Image (cartoon, rainbow, N blue to C red; front, side, top):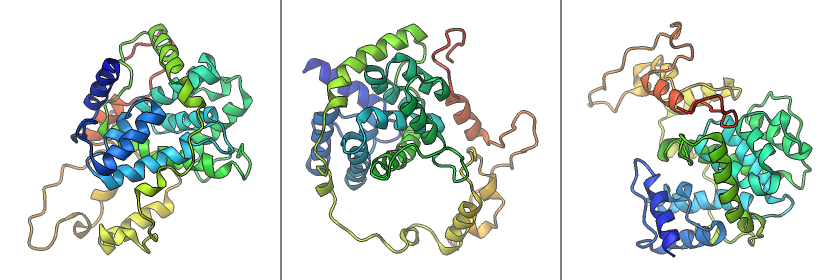
Length: 317
């Protein structure tokens, strides 16, 4: 009980920018989600905690993660953890990479788990997990030549994991601390820690939770014809649609230049209000800024640059 309280306290301190609901004060839907998460994952994990200020969003997030990842139907859990880790590497989410590579330790082994972390899936010894990680790394690229390494019966679960983690990694990168494990740990210490945690988590990774348990958390509802109408004006929706039509999944960085180049009425405020002052345009041609990132983008990119934790010759900064 004491250990669980300490872990819960540490988990809450990893959440940034919002104040998560504590387990002791959780009521209603939040309490129900927390209870399910703690029962099936041993604790209320920070990616769930960060959604707690908005109960409906919390319910949707838990459903999005639980049903494809935790429930084992046509696909075993180790394969889903490999896919989750692959998406996390693709989106440069060190926190999620640590979390799901730790889940791979007891079932896939240290070598293959570390190969995923280092973004070297071609060195994995398990051919099926290697194929799944390579697919997950590029599943968001419509022109990627990577073959689909699963059957039609397995498709809903694996695609569900990919969709869930393309959402979750983005939320984690904003609302959680940059690393699950202390970045100053040596490679050997990281491996020992992951072995220890992996052994503790192994029973939950081999469990078979009942499907559909989270579905009653949200009432059934029809999909809105155009959900964007509730949040975005018609010109802004048109701009987003035009950008998406020509986007092929490549990294765009965190620069705002694509938006700042647009007419003022797209990025300004409602008539009668003052328009906020824009920052100076970023010089994309600068040799010191090859990715065209603004100041915030450069800080984020530096903080989340991919680190190879398996090579002791490289320092973690």
